[in-house]
Length: 114
Image (cartoon, rainbow, N blue to C red; front, side, top):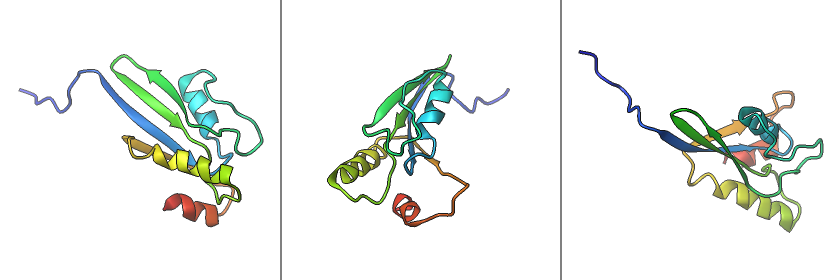
């Protein structure tokens, strides 16, 4: 008799998508969901507020949380955007870190890693 290693009930979870500004967080979420739920542009910090997109599958639902890019803030707005992004981590099941591999790590990467 084979032992069941998973429960086949409906599953759901939250995935926080984190990274520096303009690394493709919103673009990835739009691609995974197959529709535009997050604004995308070539300008850094297009995402200023946390946005959610839901992927519904037959036996699962994934709630993707698109966060503002975490960076070294120069103004209060930047501080608030960083706070909004990092607060989302607490209630999530998974953190998906997105990085631009065409650039060497810098001070903002260190901030994000913390």
